[in-house]
Image (cartoon, rainbow, N blue to C red; front, side):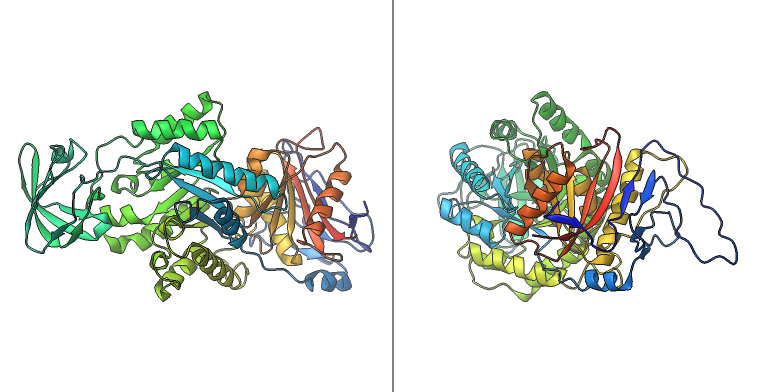
Length: 568
C-alpha cells in the first residue's frame, strides 16, 4: 500500500508462528562453516523476499539477544531515524472543585492527564456524573490517541472522628478521649464513626490522625471510650481519618456505600475501580464475580494501603488487574521508613506479573498551595519513574489545589526528563526487559506470545522504530508495554473498551479504528492516521506487530512482524 510500503531494497521480516507447533531442533553448524542464523524456536516460517535480508533470531539464546543482520546502508538509514520523545509514564489526576469544569478537564488533558480519578470519599453521584459526561465528551471529540480513562476510587471502610463545632487544639501530654457514642464533641472527647473501634485498639497502641499529622498513645479503655495521651499535637478538625499503627480495622473492605458507588460505575461504564483498604484476594474475587454477573468490563485496581495487605501482596495482585501504592495510609499503619521499600516491592511485583502499577499520595503535595514543588517531590516522581511505575497520581494537587495545571506540567516534565535517561539496554538493563526464550520443550500460546513480544521489542529497540500493534483484546499491547520499548507503542484496536483501558499502560498510545478484512488496507489506514496526527513523518521506519491467540486476519493463531518505511 502507498501509505506503508515495505522497506525498499530489503524485506520486512515476517514471523508466523502456530501456537501448537513444537520447537524445531537447533542444528549444530559445521566447524568450518560461517555462522548461520539459528532456526526460530516455534516459528512456522521465516520468509524473505530479497537478497538483502533483515532477520530476527527468535531462538532461546543464553543472553536473550536479538540478532539483526541487514545491509549496512539500510542499518544506518534506520538507526539514524530521530525518535520523538513522548512521555511514557501515565498521569492520573483526581478531579474536584478546582478542575470539575469543561474548560479545566480539557486543559488537564492537553497538559498531560491520562486518567481522570473520581474520589468517592467526596462529592455525590450528581457531581461525579457531570465529570464522567465531560470526560466522555472529550474522548468523543479527540480521536488522535489522546484518550482519557475514568477511574472510580471507592471510599472504603475509613475510621473517622466526629464533627466538631470548632477545631480542637491538642497539646503534647494532654489527655484526650475517643468514644463510640455518637454526637459527642467536648474539649477532651470526640466521637468516632466505628463501633468496633474499642475492640480494635489496646493500651500501648499509637493512634494517628490524618496519616500522622497528629498522634496519640492509648493509655486505657472502657466499654465505650478509648483514653489517650497526646504525643504530637495539632488542630483536630471534623471527620479526621484515624489509623492504628501496625493494625487494620476489622471493617469489610467494601462497604454499603462502596457497593452503591460501584453500581454507579457500572451504569456509567467507568474503566477502572480503585478499591480502598484491600486486605486479601477474597474481596477482589467478590467484586469480579459481581462485575461478571453485571456483564461489566471494568478492571479492578486494589489500593495497597493497609498493614494486612502486605502479607497477602502476591495473591492480591494475582487476583487483580494491577495495583496502586497508596502511601498515605500505608505509612500510617506501618513504619514510615518501610514505605520506600514497600513501594519498590509492589512495583516490582506488578511488573513481574505484567500488570500496571500506580504510585500515589503526596507526590506534589506542596503544590496544593505553592506554584513550585520541593526538590524532594521532584526526586519522588523521578524515583517512581525509574522503578518502572506505569502511572503516577495527583490527588489534592488537582482536586482542590491552587495550581492544578502547573502540577500536571511539573509531573509531565519531570517524568519525561527522567525517561530520557532510561530504556537503554546498556545504561538501564533493569528497566528494559531482556528477550525471552522458551523455558522448556513443551510450551503454551502464552509462552509463545511472551517470547514474541520480548523479541519484537528488542527488534524495535535495535532499529529505533516506534511499534504499531493491532489488537482486539489488548493483550499484546499490554505485553509489549511490559517489555518497555524505547520508542512509543501505538495500539490500534477495534474495541472501544480496550482503547480506554490501555490509557493506563506505560508507553501505550491507544487508538480506536475499525479493522477491515484486508490487512494491508488496515495497515495503510493506521499509518495514514499517524501521519495526519504527526506521530510519524514520511521516511520514518515503523515496526508493525500483529499477534495473538485470536488471530485478526488468519484462521489460526499467528505472530507477525513487519518493518516498514512510511510513504505518503
